[in-house]
Length: 225
Image (tube, rainbow, N blue to C red; front, side):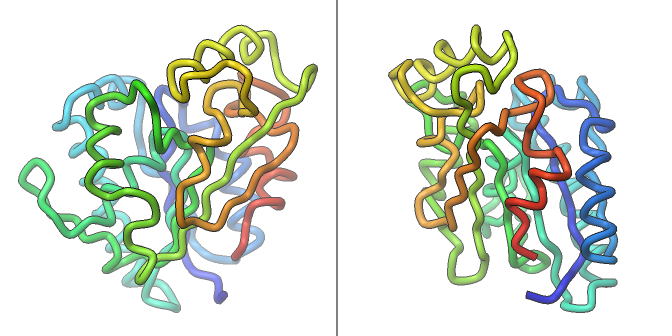
């Protein structure tokens, strides 16, 4: 695939500096523009409401349109980490959401999701809405989906992942004895119909283990550009 600009939407409450090593690796590798959608902790707290999702998706749309206009392919690659990956699935849709219709496939033709909780027994209402309306790789005729999951073995993660993982897996998938990245189980992160990538020893974020989706040596494992 030819290289093209990359637009990244991060995960819930994760600050922008956490993604800078990923951005630097992608810029060097693709020789293209790489942008991170600006989102602080308040922005993420507001995503408890639909209008909070719209605030961030409006930013995605503005930047995707601008990057696509400068892209050698006329398209951009989207990357969503954690909740960001679920939100970008909604961004692709042609149906209105909170008074806006994004139709993100106008500007993007690839979507990577990194440890995104696509399916859950007890999903938040907005995440459940996305999976109900747009299950799996709903726009695979226009979009190449790549779903990346991490699988921590004993000793791979941090104390946080060891404490939180079983409770989180229970809430998401109804079981504690599952592989996952310390927060999201593999079965939830691997979106139906997407190209699946499971990476051993990879954690949800830096607080969950020394190697996570944004670690440059891990980016090199999942990047398909």
